[in-house]
Image (cartoon, rainbow, N blue to C red; front, side, top):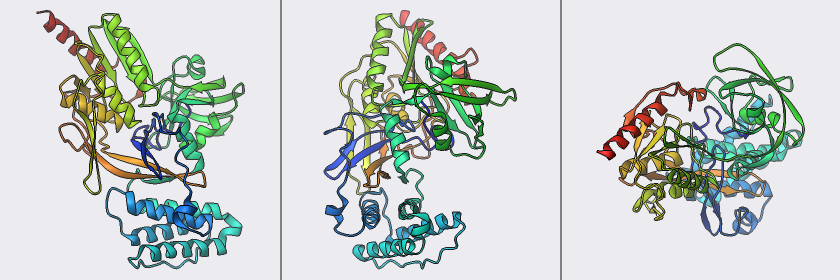
Length: 474
C-alpha cells in the first residue's frame, strides 16, 4: 500500500502503539501502523473520537480552542511532567520557523509562563491571534494554527508526540483499516539518505508488473522524487482505480533503471503472508492491523492441519500496530499470564493478559527479528521470550517501549501524544534498549533478501526447528 510507513526506514518513526482517545476515555487502537496501519474494535465505531472543544474549553475562535485543547491534553496526558514555558516557547518557535520558511522575518514577542494554566493558555492564544492578524491574510489562519500546535508538540523532544495534519491522519486511518484506496500495492519507505524504496505486495499490481523489493523510486509520471517527503511520493503514486502511473526505479545499490506503467486498482492489503516450506509453517506479518489477528490464526490452524513440524513468525521490518492485535497474537502462543503492562506518568499500571486462545500446539516456534522490529512487534517478541515459548533469532530489535494516544481535532487533524511506557511480562523496559534475540544472526536489512536463498536468518530458524524436531523424536 502506498503509505508513508516511516519518514526514514519503515519502522524508525512508524513504530508505534497508539490509543484512540475520546472525551469519555481512551479506546485502544493501534498503528498498523504499520506506519500506518490498522485497527481494532471500538465502542461506537471508528469515528468516536470527535471532540466538542467549544463545550470543553468554552468560547473563543476555533483556532484558539485547538491551541487550548493541545495545551490541555499535553499537560494532562504526556507521560512526563511538562512545564508551561516549554509549550509557550514551542508555539513561538513553530510560528517563527513556519514564517521563516515563507521568507518572512516574524515580529512576534516571546511570552513568559505564569504558572497559572488559564493565564498561560491565554498567552498562547494571544500570540496566535497576533500572528493571524499580521500574517493570516497572506498565509492562512489554518496554516498558522497548525504551525503553532506542531511547535508545541515538537518542543517536548519526543519523536512520537506530534501534530498530524488532516492528510496525515487520513493516511493513518486508511492504513489502519487495511487500505481501500486507489494504488499499485506497495509499501514505501524512506532511508536516511532520503531515497524512497518500494516493497511490492504479492498478487497486487506492482508485483504483477515485475517490481521487486528494495527498488528505489526515481520518478513518478516524469516528476523526480529527489528531495521529496515520503507522503508527497505516496500521493504521487496513488490515484483513481483504473488510471495508469508511470514509475522509474533502480534496484537497491545498483544503477540500472527500470520503467513501469502500472494500472492502479482499489487496494486492500493483507498483513500476513504464509506458506508451508520444508515442513514448517512460515508466517510473515507486515504489521499489527485490524485483520492481523484473524489472519495469523488462520495461518497457524492451516499449518496445524498440515502437520507442521514447527512455526516461524517473521516480524522483521514490522513497525508495530494495534495494541489489541499484539495481545491477541501473543495469546496464540502464551496460554496465560500478563502479555504487557503500561505505566502512565502517575505510575498507574494497566496490564493486558493472555486471552486463553493458544493455538500453536506443541510444535516449536521461532520468531525472526531485526533492528526494525518495533513497538507492537516487540510486545509480542518480548512475551514469547519471557515465557520461553519460542526462540528469537536475528538482531537486536528497535527499542520502542512507549505508547501513544491519538486525540482527534475539529480541524480534521489530530494530536499524537506519548501517554505511557510499557514493560514485558518480566518487567523489562525496552525503551532505547530493544530486545536481544536468543540466537544472534547478523544480516543486511536489505528487504530483497527476506525469504530468499540468501536469507541467513530464515535458514538459521529452520535449522533450529529441525534440531528441535529431531530432539522431539528421541
